[in-house]
Image 1 (tube, one colour):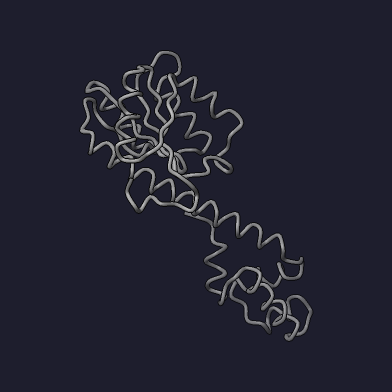
Image 2 (cartoon, rainbow, N blue to C red):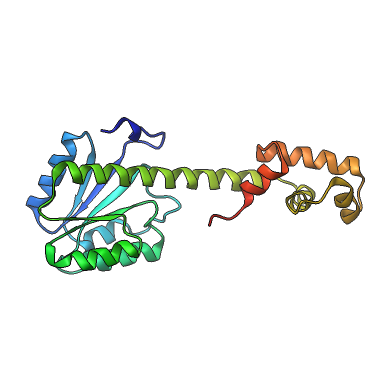
Length: 217
């Protein structure tokens, strides 16, 4: 396994969704040679059932990606991918499509819609695992962002109503005197609330606070 995949979130996991047992077994063996764990699902419907009750806010808990066959009986790979996108999983669970030559245009279209990549069968073992490792790194980055968002939400929950009022005006760029006038409190009181906001939000400046609260683009 690539040393850069060592994660505070736990061991990476690769989910294999293909209706052919021999393909899943071959992929699992290949991933084991690079010290990567995998879990196989024999159909799109089986993986959809596995996801029942899960949300991107609570799953996965370790860097993960999905190797997904385009053509399968029942719920196709493309239909499953559409569900993943709709439910917001595409960022935390990057999808690599496994495709035959005739499905390449379809796979390219899926990449434009948010899939991580596609690999054409028969594939190069090393090239495939290299792409898997890159997908796992993307998943880890998404988990980092998710953890950061949770940390901010916890910090915000600890603020008093007055601290929130002061924080909002600080983020707008208002100096302490104008904040004091707007809230009808003393400048000293503003300074105290401002210091508490910075401490609870773990920031050193108004610019850092504004960046922390800025919605992701």
